Length: 187
Image (cartoon, rainbow, N blue to C red; front, side, top):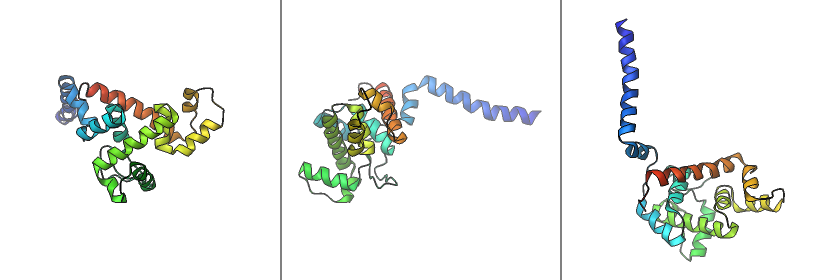
């Protein structure tokens, strides 16, 4: 009987401590799960490319969880998960030199990722389509748009054939809202 009481205390007490902490320090608790690193670089890129800084933070969070040395199985690199070929193309458009290692520099990665997102947003005229293209490639989005099966962007987004891309657009959108709530007034 005594052992069961101890077990209950060991299990229940941490739960109440966590709940008290979350209730007492909601902002800090949320910040543990939604960190905001590289705030200055995000702010600069936000202004330079007219992109909501909370969207940039959400993209970085969903792409790499703010790990600057992150590399996907497909070979995308850095905070904003840029493919080396895309990085080379963006660098050419920005008239800057490029080495694949540049993508590991958080300043370069955020700037190039935001430039590329801005390019896609201008191309498609819709942030959600730009997110889909950022995740799956612009050729896929071009193909989906040219199929003519959709009356509007919302319908197309709901029927994106790549589940990963469909979920990516949804997750970034929701994460953006979380960042805007948690870090309201930070930018």
